Amino acid sequence: MEVLLTEEEIQKRVREMAAEISRDYQGRSPILVGILRGSFLFLSDLVKQLTINPEIDFMSVSSYNNLTRSSGVVRLLKDLERDISNEDVVIIEDIVDSGLTLSYIKRMLMARLPRSLRICALLDKRERREVDIAIDYVGFVISNKFVIGYGLDLAQKYRNLPYVATLDESEAGVP
Ligand code: IMP
Ligand code: MG
Image 1: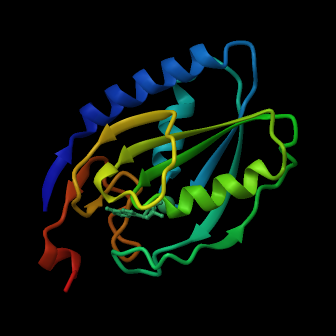
Image 2: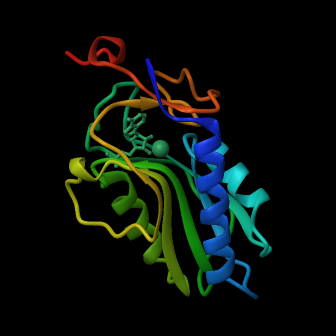
């Protein structure tokens, strides 16, 4: 295990992202949609730094089934609790890898006719993209390595780490 992003680096970047979002949504109350479970630490740190008054809601989808690779199958496990038509929505995601999860979520939310829909992701593994999807707020572009910590898991463990670390292939269990 090797630390990729320290707690300090993450917190600094989260403050910058919060400032940018606060500027862009000045005078508005967007609904921040946290994608469970990976985004929970990022979302909680981000909202504490915002100078606007957002609403917060959550969605849960499954795409990884405890493995380190995308199955390509996305299943909706928990939907939003409120209607988003005519609302400003910002999806908060931990990491964009193939992009399959987000493009599924985006398509589903766009069908509900929000006033606007943007995407905010802490980590962007751009090299791995399989579908074209625009990320409006990106924390860090990272290389193609499996990462854990700060919400990100390996078989549901390590989400609690305050930093992001890479696992090598044997640790990550990739054949
Ligand atoms: P995508 O559909 O391939 O973009 O995968 C996105 C989801 O896969 C993220 O929301 C994460 O939950 C998970 N994921 C992708 N890469 C990693 C990683 O390196 N570590 C932990 N989870 C990951
Ligand atoms: Mg996720």
